[in-house]
Image (cartoon, rainbow, N blue to C red):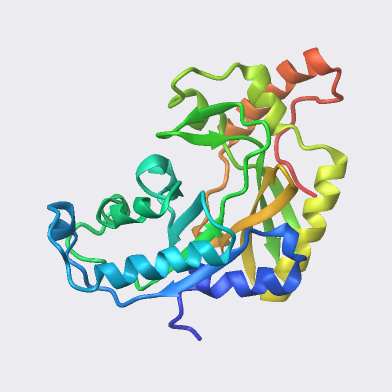
Length: 261
């Protein structure tokens, strides 16, 4: 077991599927396909042997989870910051940009050992406040730090600077505060889910959630020691946006440092 990369979706997703009801995670189809394609040939439009079969597998996977649009990713990454060129798939033809996707993953010489892919249900982000990173919608997302089922801490997924520095239109602080505010009901709901997943998989993890049109869903996981966590500056920024939000919506929010539960 020690030689398995536990950050792979193919490793952690079965634990989510076992621990949570089916409406609490995206429908997911996993495809195993041999690695080793020459990405430069793909980018040059060369007909690389095996590509047609791979594309067929991806299209069958998309049909099996309900059709388009779908969210497409490798076992280790979705390259979501290049949304329109990578993980967002509106039609069967979009899978043909496999070379661009792999290039954005940083594997410019070959498939880079990527032999497992996932096609996932694309759940609409509930009330996104901004669209950035080549079309990526940003709304309410959370990261929970869990150790063997115990919740250590939790915080918003998007630091303020990640939204304000790259947004095409900019997002007012009150809007960022709106998606950063963690209500008591939300924390109770997500804590229960994160605890269930954490107890099932064991060890120390980050567990990510997104608010969608059908409620909060568990969308991602990674080992905690390899996961992003906020700096003190990020926490101060969130507190500032929450004060902006509180002034408009009469929320009981005050600046604070470490968030824990």
